Length: 339
Image (tube, rainbow, N blue to C red; front, side, top):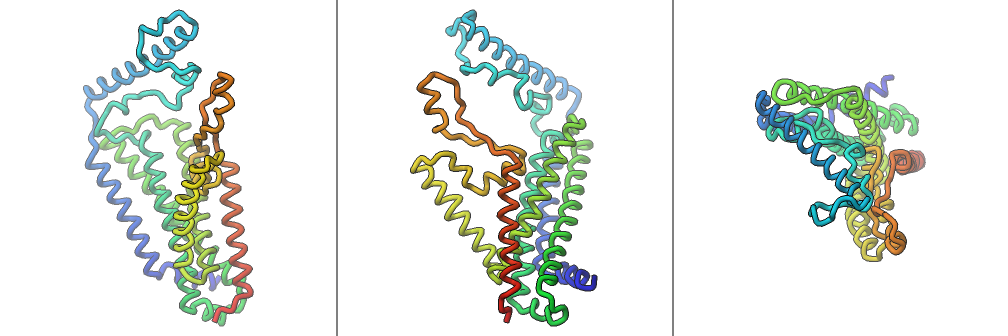
């Protein structure tokens, strides 16, 4: 227990951690202030006009769908309309759309919590992922580079215990900070929506969907923290983690992606870590590959050329990557000469 308390004090006393917390609070304050300044409570006239426009847009979608069905059945002359009609009319069926036009879509300058909560949460999660990775890398990297770990081992000469407590302290602290920050963050924008905008439709489905994104985001933050910790442990320096991420982004996400497109490789997005991060965070990610439709185009069949990555394989890839590097870090730390 004394070791845990000592590590908590060491982590909270690091100037880099304090700076990152200040930057987190600053980004949060700027986002909230900008949203508040750019929003206003809609008047009854604005709401009435917006509702009428939304109803008109929904009716237009329904008319377009019915015209597509009539054209497919041969009862609607194609010359009577210049609108685009897909070969599969179910693509434009209003019932199958992710969302239909609502009044908030026609209220410019009005913040809607129901519409903006998810994008705002994605922004916070992205910052917390960066926060966790940098703090995790600097926490162990600075100790290894300065000899702090050696001094700690003189007091508690058990390498695996010391490294495990460091990792556990890091993950626990980052999790507590992430939960607190996200709850305060969402509560602040909910108040803005209630007082200077629109709350929107906040039913059970909305909160369940937002809660799912929040939970997946917290898992991603913890994985990023452990990943930064593991790479810095393997490289014995904070810069090792930063260099590894930069090298991966430039060499693989940019360079290899370009090469795969040139050689027309099938489903190149399946080879990119960013695809799995997006699939895990959103629950499912769709990607386009023109090769999928080459056989269907010859036979005259319908093909949209999209394929999906779901959250389950995405999580498996992220866990294998993080778990493998973390296990390697512990194995190397156990036998390495720390002097």
